[in-house]
Image 1 (cartoon, helix red, strand yellow):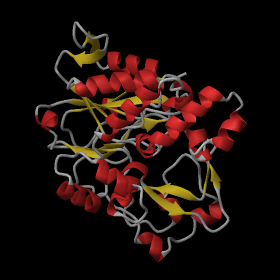
Image 2 (cartoon, helix red, strand yellow):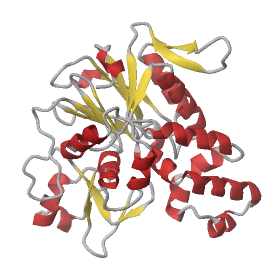
Image 3 (cartoon, one colour):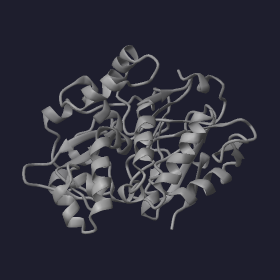
Length: 338
């Protein structure tokens, strides 16, 4: 257990921010946090609660939104000053893995004005160029700052546990987390971990993929889905709490619906074996990642998703937790994002 969580009776968990800086400030203020200068010799500032409460961020600070650098700076300061914790999101993991490729891309952006020239010359995959476009634009001319951010991302844990709750970005897989607890008891992944995570088939690669991206089910050959983010995918995101699911429609968990003929199709045995199940009697778990819509509420009595599509004119969400089970709808707090 992280030592900061030992001291907490109440925490505020905040979902995917994706560069939505002004909404983040509004949400912190709504939760009762106030701006505080870190030190007399520093221009940095944190947000502090009069009751000494802690913020826990579920990851995905970067990409898509208009003020990525400001979000990272504030959250990093809050974490380093002991006012917050954060778990790694899949977007931060992309930044770690492609840190130097991004540096080369930023140098190209400084040199070339035509985007097509940059794409042709860049070693950064075109998919990531689209996904990270907002972040790339905001870090042009700031390579040292980018490298510093990536080094800080490496220090973030993949999951957190308190006495009465758990936090992960996308999926709590107990078997993989048990292995990580054994291999990395201080919650920190080192350079060797990230080197191994780049190789498909390693336990490190599987752990990062499952914990930061969830359980993905492949679509039949030739079938693709175009998500709300405009990305074409040949898989869909699956629930990790579906009890005794029978069809693919029982496990789909994303804003983009499956084609009817697939939704009604019984789950293949090989895909059943890939599913993760989080028991109803387990500690409450909080996560983000899944772009929900509508009014926030618990998915089950011990499951809460905190990603309500903030960067797509949705809601930036928090849940104020003080040990309760079942989780309560009235404990969600949010600001609308225009």
